[in-house]
Length: 220
Length: 220
Image 1 (cartoon, each protein chain N blue to C red):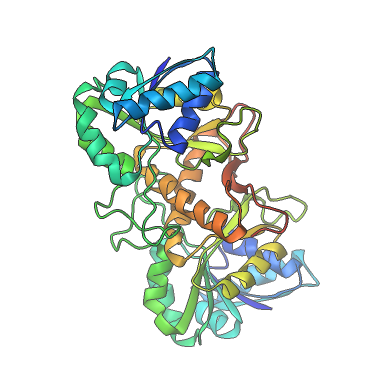
Image 2: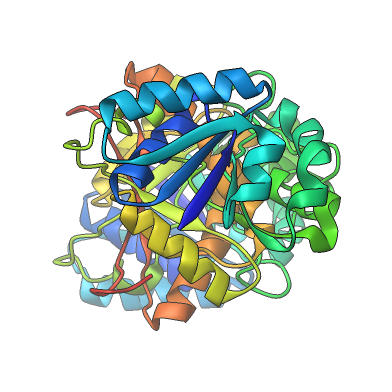
């Protein structure tokens, strides 16, 4: 699959791209500046010579990907989407965005009363189908392919078939994806990122994560 | 410790009370009707003859407990707290309440923009210190003492010392409690209950839970 990553030079986006590229997907690293995206792609290719990775600006990546991942800080979400909305063409748009609030690690609802993923859906309208995922995944070990990631991915969105595609991408990146309900539940998943950040700080660790327990074999 | 459980005849409240009584705490089962509380206590004593369990109405329980647990449905929270606020005397009030929204399993913020735990704190003011905990724990296996509960308890509140007391009560009930930050984070924990309910429904199970991963031994 051709996966475009907007904000693909950041730790989270580049880590996911790295894992997907290693799993055989074609990865398009998008950045605000085309040159930064190209340079990040080049560095990744140096580590994964067999992988298909290219870089450019966010609009270039969004136009070229079959699936688009939004991996920018919340503060850059609206501007980034304004740049790319016209070229999304109804694709799946996976939101990795987790607003962290002020102070950090303390949940504060967005002024809209929506999650970042719902705000994204409202902004792009018919141009894309937003799915929430990967907000809780610590970036620290994504680029170490030998590291077993001890965390699940809560996947939110309106249609199970779309979420199944994303659950497949979770598996390709070495994680278990779980259908966590409608897009409205993204507020919970995004808020969990702030909670995990606080747990990291208090326990002086970098990668607190969550697991869903009680699922049967093959549950999702 | 003397632990009062408001709504102690419900599945969640009675299950927690059962575990605490079995662990040696004195448990006061409160209910809207004194007679219902007494009957529930009697039934529990029949199963745990060595335990100290008594029952009565919610105000009686709230007055007698050293720690008070609010385990009523969200719809009954305001009325219950109005009945007991005057006798709380500055105690810890543990909120187990998780509003489930409509439709169920889909997160919807409360009209106040607060969590149920924050609403409780606002209502009782100086009369109690609210701590959020146990909202995500499936009631199904609480009364089976041989069942290892595969879930963590996210504990929210303003003061670490108060949360440490509740983390101790988690251990007494066979669970790991984790400091999940300030009371504002209760919205995330409460919302997670709706997410877990949806996971239960889709996977035809009764006890999806969460675990925090990445914590060092003894982390909290």
